[in-house]
Length: 477
Image (cartoon, rainbow, N blue to C red; front, side, top):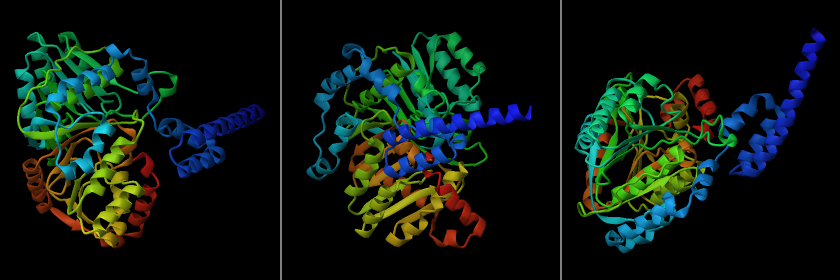
């Protein structure tokens, strides 16, 4: 019996080393950086029995299934075909950016493949009560269709309210589509979804399991939060569907920001939803692609994700930092920047730009919270001001550059958003709107405490060790 056990164990070890070696060849070919490739090669060959599961769950950095699905679609039936039609429809609303803005931010159109348009009306929705009151009112007013997409939907009071409004609308004869992320909403029970399906709501989960190479993936989550009503009104921002987003959870007051959109920019947002829906269901939705003027603001929708050929989310942050001349304010619940992003933040501060990073003081993900402390010394050296929000938990994702550029949506300043998640941001070029965002952030800074490296160096040795250990996980945080 002992011999049999030893034989089995030695066989398993040998197999793990063979698989580790094969996986290390895959890592050499697919890793984004030499440092990442070296780390995987060493760990996969030295301790394959431990690192093999981690590599195949976290090691991949491109969502090839999504890419191949888009390529295989017939042009006349695919969202890429809609992109051509969308650009034609939006041509009358093409924005003529000021020369300084055009020089700095026209590149975003190339990266996102969506245009800046004028004729938009964009409204700030601060916190959960304002946001979901507006969303539910819009759903109730729908005449043609309702499109809803969230990363997290919970079977609680707010989740039941959403379900009630969707069921009421579909029973009135208006088609309703609901898309949720399979991992983000992993706790969503069938008893929540069943009444929706029975009522006639089209429900689907976004997942990364199409094709054998995508199985067991925790990466490539769809972090987008999108609502579109009749192709005329849209919503996006940081809020998911759950009672904690209304300030009823263990973290208390939940500080978040959402947007209500009208105008041609809604067509671009709708295109993002339709592409995600096609991946999840292989169904092409019949939607309203006729844009109309709703205001005077200039804006664009900036989608990003691991299916992009370039690292579009990271490049949005890069461009915002490089373009800043006197002000760069960023609010994010998670601050785990890559080294290039941190270098650019330091350079901006050294150029004299007022660089401020607004973070939560309470952790909802402890590893990310601990890792954020590791950047305090680099921030202090360059004059970057780090603030921690004291009035509850801060979850908003906001970028403000100088006096006219803003980006608000779902992207955090961490590796998951920059490289691994599907995200969407609304980018605006409008002085009046930028001023309203500045006023909002100033109120947040008034409820915050400026922190420094002393807040780490004065902590216990155990805490400092935990911060350094957490930093090791930055690539998957």
